[in-house]
Length: 455
Image (tube, rainbow, N blue to C red; front, side, top):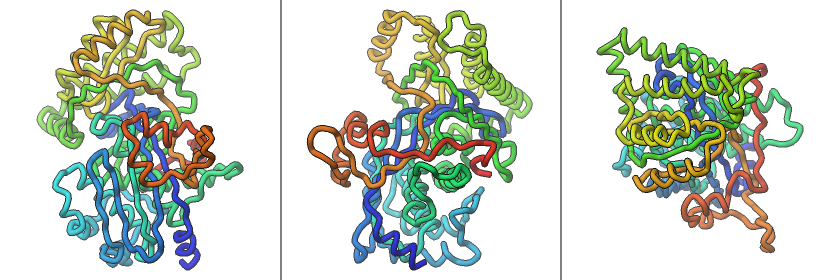
């Protein structure tokens, strides 16, 4: 313990980043023990941790994107109940449900949050902080910025949960920063620990998450994911050769609540068990077939008249139609689908919980520039927002210390809390701390033959 306390007090400011995710196939069905395919997006969250001098006994969470700026006194937090022998969880634990006593102990420290979204985010932070730390932990400021549209079905909460899990375990000395020569088995163990505790953060926010969002945000690339039983680890197949699919990502700018949409599907299943069960089974088959196509040697997303790619386009349309039958589409999503059909650029489906949020269009090969320009102009005219993004990038990464050289003659620049929070908009955040810049290191891709996440 003395070694850990000493290590914590001497940490430099550091950054952690994790990606958004796009569910390509299987949303909603994955919550009900069916298969899904999800991939990492280049949109990301960035968490800057700035340790404070030892005599300052506070922690501060600053998350301006959702209006959080709150400070807690470390010594006033409910350490006793979190570290009771019958309650204490350790960094290597795999936790499948929250402890109601621990949740209740946090309530007096969350009373200031009136908005449900901010309260759940703060709860995730405190639950992880108290679970992974101890009452001797040093003070710090945690500032979060995100280039991920919040509440749009792109896994923004999972990205944040992965950042928090990683940063807190780095502070506690239970993770090592990535380095050349790190043994594969140690890499897998570290990713597993990050993913396990990110799942706990997701439970604080979504109650009963599938686990797919945090799995993608941890490992990057793409995964085939299925959780047949909540009491056992999920089936995870890491898709190492996932192709860079040509996508158009569009935000409806229509807000919605994931938990309410998930609950509405559960209610539909209760009311129409057989029919809704067949719909979920059909989505499962879509995900299974899509996995076979994507991993086939004959698959080419850029080749004209490739029969496998045509099948994939058909599966996108089918999956969307099944989700419409489950009642989770929205007129704005249907309008985007209508426009992409009118301009004949590809196949469109909602992604995430639906009810608004985002859609993606799997583009046909060699779509003419004039077609895309006309479509994009129409989308902008009707108030939709298009994102430039790529699929299948890095998972969680760290910049240690938070220092960058921008190549403009200033030399090394320390990323301070003030710099981090003053960046305006997605563009300035990316320019300041973007994951493609120098200084970032990533845990190498996990190998499913070595160790699956959440196992």
